[in-house]
Image 1 (tube, rainbow, N blue to C red):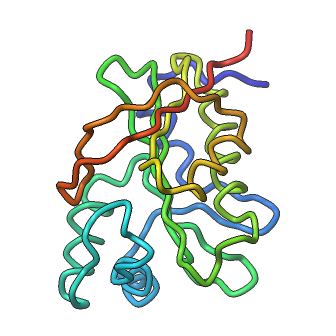
Image 2 (image 1 turned 90 degrees about the vertical axis):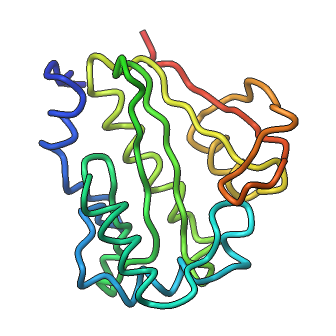
Length: 184
């Protein structure tokens, strides 16, 4: 493993495109609006996360304001076979930039095919190459068993359950926290 010794945000800026066997992780663009809206408007898919977008205008605003305005660590998950965006995956850094948090959303039509795990493993590999980052964390609503399975598949272990946590919808839920520490 070649460690990247620059600051983590610089490393993210240097790694805007990550290719796996079936996927391309890349910055989002306005051209992704149709695909982005297809999963950000699905209330059933997002029931453990944020409120679904009501229309394409709201999706466009989310795409630009949330993903394109601060693109470092935010990736479209593009299926190479079709060149369509099938979801998104994000790395957030803590203030000290020694802990990265991962989150992902995948269009329901692409569930149960290993795409979320494949994308998450690619970002885990990137995180381990960045010298300053020591820990990768993730959390999910305790009812979101699919997301929890992805965390386990990439090697994360359960840390704690936070009862009484508030999700992005403002609901009081139990959040499950997972983490994995950099080897060595």
